[in-house]
Amino acid sequence: MHPLPYWRLSGYYFFYFAFIGAFSPYFGLYLKSLNFSAWDIGLLMSQMQLMRLFGPNLWGWLADHFGHRLAIIRLAGCIGLAGFTAFFWLDKLPGMLAAMAVLAFFWSAALPLVETLTFDHLCDDGSRYSRIRLWGSVGFIVAVMATGSLLDVAPPVGVLWVCWTILLGILAYALTLPEAPPVDHACGGQPIGDILRQPKVMALMAACFTMSAAHGAFYVFYSIHLDAHGYSKTGVGLLWSLGVVAEIVVFVFMARLAKRYSLRGILLACFAAAVLRFLLMGWGVESVAIMVVVQLLHGLTFGAYHASAIAAVNQWFPGKVQGRGQALYSSLSFGAGGLLGALISGRTWDWLGSGWTFTLGSLFALVGWLLIWGWVRDEPGARAAERVKKPDPVQ
Image (cartoon, helix red, strand yellow):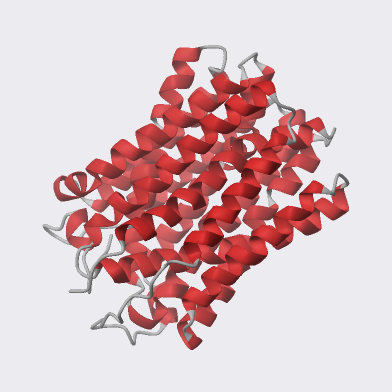
């Protein structure tokens, strides 16, 4: 068995999600300081989801057909950093849209390929994925706390310097990642169209779409929502960090949970938690205690949900279609679903208000729960952990 490059993989996840920790909560506040409207902010932030619609599919197809996935990961890190650098000189909508599109197109290419690289390094021990992925959550916490504290004493432009430095770290770790030896899959030759026509696959992909749509307003407007109700930047950072602490706890215990509960049971709990979470987020913002509960639920609505969904995709799309499977998951959920959620929230934020905007997110989560309940079934006697292993890792 080849040695697992644990710290190099973990370091990449640390910086990748540290970027999200600095960018998602605070870049919207930076845009607000430039006097962009809610619609403009939603449009700009939605570029991250828009490019994930087709970017990962293109890069996944190239990696599956021609190999060289490490070269693509490194190219993505290099051009993503260059694209973000343009923000230091831009302050008008057209130019910022172009720069955001370049950043998002290349930044979105990397993670699905790194996910498949990680599972290939794990071989038949896919349950250890959560122990590597949790370092991404640690990176998120460090970034969100440090950036929030910085912005309490520095102007909003400080977020640009933080994000640029983190993107440099992503590139540095991308250059250190080693390729994994090839993994044989018994059903690796199955056409991707046949896989996509399976009811459980269609239902899971559709449910992932609705879960990301449910999070659209959260990722674009949650910090603005808290800021408008008197929370300090440090307080905003603490609440974001609390959510990721809950996520880390779930990642640590995910292998144990997967042995005890079925995939279907875990996913149903995650979607039910999302229904409650976004209702509380919209209508309970005046209460710090309710916001604490809201962020603790992130452990289910992202941590357990993502770990389960990505393991299922990793099993259901084996062998030569694995890269495209992860790309489809990223594109349909974080891409299409996130884009729809961001655009809808950008339109409804001023029109319907924050409460009803987050309520729409709750309705998206309810649709996802119904999809899982109706079409994702467990094999008799199987537990989620049994599906996280290769060559048959599932969900």
